[in-house]
Image 1 (cartoon, rainbow, N blue to C red):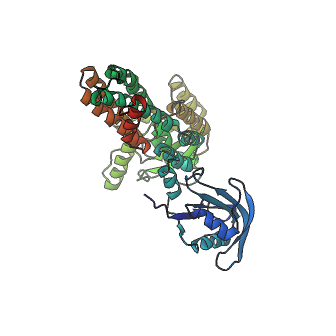
Image 2: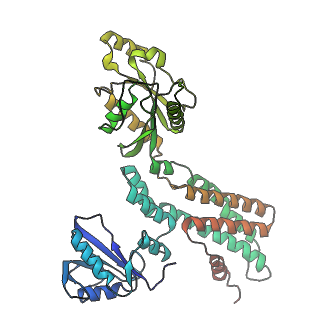
Amino acid sequence: MISDRDTIFALSSGRPPAAIAVVRISGPGARMALEQMLGRVPQPRRASLARLRDPVSGEIVDEGLALWFPAPNSETGEDMAELHVHGGRAVIAAVLAALAKLAGLRPAEAGEFTRRAFENGRMDLTAVEGLADLVAAETEAQRRQAYRHLRGLLGERAESWRQRLIEALALVEAGIDFSDEEDVPKDMMARSLELIRPLAGEISKAGAGQGERLREGLRVAIAGPPNAGKSTLFNRLARREAAIVSPFPGTTRDVLELHLDLGGYPVTMLDTAGIRETTDPVEREGVRRASERAADADLVLWVVDATQVQSQDRPTHGGIPSVTWLVVNKIDLLSDGERRRIESKFAKTENVNLISSATGVGVDELVNSVAAFADGFFTPEPALVTRERQRAHLKETVIALRDAQRAGEEGREEIMAEQLRLAARALGKLLGRVDVEDVLDVIFRDFCIGK
């Protein structure tokens, strides 16, 4: 835990130079910092024009805006201040140096403002993870998902489940420990079972969806035999010479990655080595990696040479997933008659794209098709779970809940109570809050035991 005596400060805006820089201060010394540098404390939550002075020399460092957020109504739950100054490197350095001269202030560590918000109850762990995802979001879909979690999409739901679990546990605990009390009802077990029966189903459904995948992005592997034009297609998508292109087979040895935003969804394109049997140990390792990455991909674009399409029109190597599209490349090398024959050959075949990665013919249509695939791949419903940690805690909760229900139906009150405690603890770990005193609070509030 961070000491209450620490007051931290840091640049909270982007890297300089910039038009404006925001320096954040949080802790019990935030008010003193404003008094020392501004000579006054602005009205709470109102931007105030101020001249910032070095607390030792009295020299004016900059002129900007100051804001004051007294605890507990601040982002961190502590006294907090913000200084909005000009975003030049020298100005920022001077402001940070001035703050460092004040007693009790120190530079913040990475993530420390958010850590304090969590420790002071301003955010739960799911919101913290949502904030991290929001900062890292590269596409519109990732931004929407991260913002929902920052605003409590999973946290509020999990807290609701946790409160229902605590109520159910309080009923069972009261039935066990205070069965002789006249004001404690006798149907505790039945009432508790009514509360927990629907919970397991609700929490199991919450684990469905593609939340983690949306964070990571759709993986699309460009695979196929050597010299089919895979790297040329990769470069066309990258709009730069990202991969080496050569007429010699086996040029691509490692897997290259390209991150795209297609229709608001994150897509990672993988350029893999030509898949074929080879005696070259280095190329053989490249083929192994290519096959492995293709097998793990969500979609494989199997690229073949249009001039050799008769012998290369289907994957010939094991481990390729079922979602595989055929991409007939180099159609610019065909005569009109040969092209018509290929078009006729695949006229009734789904997921076949005729392109020329060299000239760009058909590439836009291929990209649009991949974007449409991504749109269907990711669930349209907001995903409650976006991390494996969250999924693991929810699974742990469901297992404990089902064991509790089974024990309750068999009349084993002590076992049911223990399983409910485990379920509540798992949800507490999801949120970052584990407090066994919650159960006693509910018992004493609802049953007036020990009056």
